[in-house]
Amino acid sequence: MVDKVQAELKSAFSDLTIHEESYPECGYHLSLDLAAGDLEKAARFFDDRRFYLAVELCVDYREYLEIVYIFSIHSSLCKVKVTLKIDPVNPVAPTLSKVFDCAWWYEREIHEFYGVRFDGHSDMTYLFLHDGIDVYPLRKEKVLVAEADRLELNSFSPEQREDSLSINMGPQHPSTHGVLRVVLRMDGEYIEDAYPVLGYLHRMQEKMAENRTYQQFLPNTGRMDYLGAMSYNLGYVTAVERLVGIDVPARAHYVRMIATELNRIASHLLWVGAYLADLGGLSPFLYAFDDRENLLDVLEAVTGSRLTYCYFRFGGLYNDVDDAFVAGTKAFVARMRGRFALYEKLVGGNVIFINRTRGIGVIERELARKCAVCGPVLRGAGIGMDFRKAEPYAAYAEMNFEIPTGRNGDALDMYHIRIREMETSLDIIDQSLARLSDGPFMVEKPPKKLKPRKGDLYHTVETPRGELGIYIVSDESDKPYRMKWRVPSFSNLMAFPELAKGNLLSDAVAILGSLDLVIPEIDR
Image (cartoon, rainbow, N blue to C red; front, top):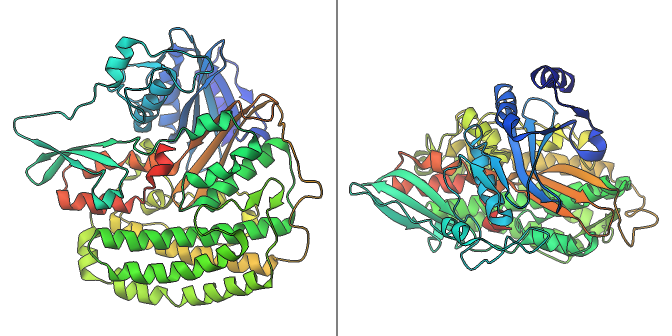
């Protein structure tokens, strides 16, 4: 696939240099630097070949700003980095929102954090920040927000029409869990438009990354997706290990996978309980949390935590697991395998639940690609993409497991996908336990201070919500020059406005809940 894309790129952009890159070192296969006039052409090139825009981000190199686009494809392992250099004094770039829906969101984020204006973009209002911000936070030098830009950034107000009514769903609404607001424009009981409003829990994690050493930033990872903290912990340590060139002992790989898959099950159990509670069914919540508490007892014994884990270290683990952890894990696996019949009887076969979710929030494959949705939401739409298989990390390449996919892409499929994914996680845990032999759990000489090679890396892992991409730019110091977190809840939220249109207000809860959003992950 890479060779074919490279040949077609050379034909389409004959006057440009296309660089072949070392995928193990940088996480992408090809790179090219474009002029502004070629950008939309390049976007349509990738769109025609069924690529999706995995992430769009900005890096301030002081002499210039660089917009970075990572294009990927569901059917094969092929990643292309496209860059566009722009003037830092008057930063203007073409919008790609007319080609990829997700660019509409990423460009708003870049605009408020760097001051880049995107020609042709329909909405440059604040996405995460507010009108009290005086500077562009991620610029390396202090760049004040111009008055004209401030007025535009703070110009959001719900559209008022004589024949419709705008109402707020959240941030106090129980189903938005306190930190998400969605402005709904209603025609009677039917949704005409949905406009998510973010930033209620924004903490500037990416700015903090630039001001902390690689080791100091490690605890921050568990504060983004607090329900899938182990996946974030694993994604970060494996990204830095890849950037530095650290080989991890086999025992550490297996323990990492066991802990991460246990955390994945815990996350899915919480989703099952909370989702059913949002829809009015409280009994499943109690059963799911009973299972989850048993699981958390196992993880707490070795990590010291029940939620925001920071168990992995560069080169291995904080501490080794013992026989009690192995026995507890085996006991939980046996218990959990016997619980799926209960969930099928209580939830999967419940006629009320089926009628509330069947045919609701159907995600078509084209919408999934344009919005770059991922994880169970993508697989529910019938696209069997899982980075544990597509780009194996840790020791997932040794594991034998199936990738469950849906048929209809509706909210009911999203439930069944997550139930089957818990079964898949149990299979991976069993295989990892069988391979868990004696040996070191940490490299012989753990690094005390990290100074990675100069360059960049885009590293992806599969979290309970989908594709987590970590883009790191290293300037050979002990702190990241730039660290961008491409989080799955953000890309999955991008599909909600389209999914909500034409549905009843009561269905908005079922649709939003089926996406399994963690808002602190979006706000970062």
